[in-house]
Amino acid sequence: MAFAPLDPVLHNQLRLAVMSLLVAVDSADFNYLLEKTGATRGNLSVQISKLKEAGYIEVTKTFKDNYPNTSCRVSPAGLSAFEAYVAAIKGYLKT
Figure (cartoon, rainbow, N blue to C red):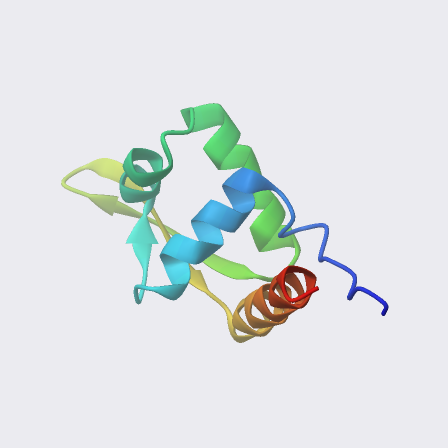
C-alpha cells in the first residue's frame, strides 16, 4: 500500500492550526488566530505569509478604530488543499 504524499505547506503544526481555524469560519482576524493558536506574533505572521504565498488564504489589511487589522480567509484552492490533506492523513490512519 502506498501512502499519499502530504502537502508540505500544510504539514506544519502552526499552518495546519491556522487552516483548521479558518475553514470553520468565514474569516478571522490576526488577534483571533493569535489567541487560538498561542503562537508568537512573529511566527504567526510568517506562517500567514507562507499560506498566502501558496494561495491557500486571502489576507486583507484594513484599519479598525485607527489600528491596523489583518483579516484572513481560506481561498477555494486552500479549501481543496486542506480537504486533500485531511483525506491523506485519514489514509495513513487506516493502515
